[in-house]
Length: 287
Ligand code: SF4
Ligand code: MG
Image (cartoon, rainbow, N blue to C red; front, top):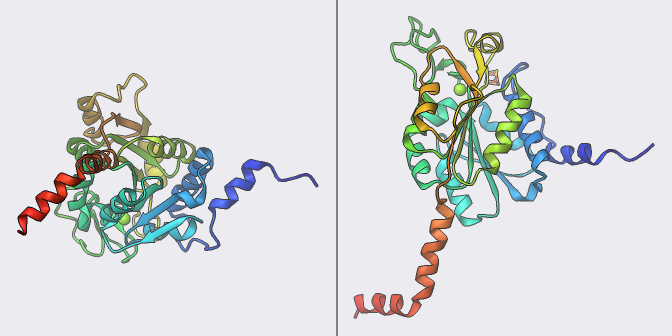
């Protein structure tokens, strides 16, 4: 028998020994497949990848990838991922977690990660529900959504994650659907290649606890971003994000801005250029 093709050999390297424990039909399987495919496409060595997650069904994902991983505490993906990236800028750092983790307990970290613009990717597997705790309303659940925590319907309106990160100034903003794995792979490749903070909101159905936002529902409500869309036009991106009942898939916005690591390095060089003065100033404070 001939040798296995190189592409197949490489793909197997990204799959860990741990089998996913998600329910059959969970949207997160499609995201995992796209993660494998994206790293395969980019040809990144597993030793150069660090996946960072929080708490939730989707946050188990680092276990299933044969790279470095950090399964942290609830809502703290972004501070952890930022610290890892600044400490080792050579790593491809990808944060992955759910909508509850990202937009409820972790929401306070989003604007700060965005204004710092670290060169990392943040993928939110958005199913509009808390799956791990067995089906409560999340920050992206629709108004009047009936769950265990809102038996008479949610009295809150949902967040709009894309509009939020666009307004905060994220330099790469995209939306994918786990039911369209090929397109999602392309988005992840573009997000990982982007030099700066890249945000990908992924419609990733929870068939166990969310019987409304299903694969079928999304298949009928997604549309590709119009070909004439200018990805450097923030207002046009915002208009797409604010369109009710439409889920545009693709890259909404992409611009270039210095990254946190570049700015940290520039700051370091300033200090190195004047080590004597720094030392003298410090000593003067204590004499
Ligand atoms: Fe996926 Fe929902 Fe099952 Fe969690 S509860 S593994 S989100 S289908
Ligand atoms: Mg969720």
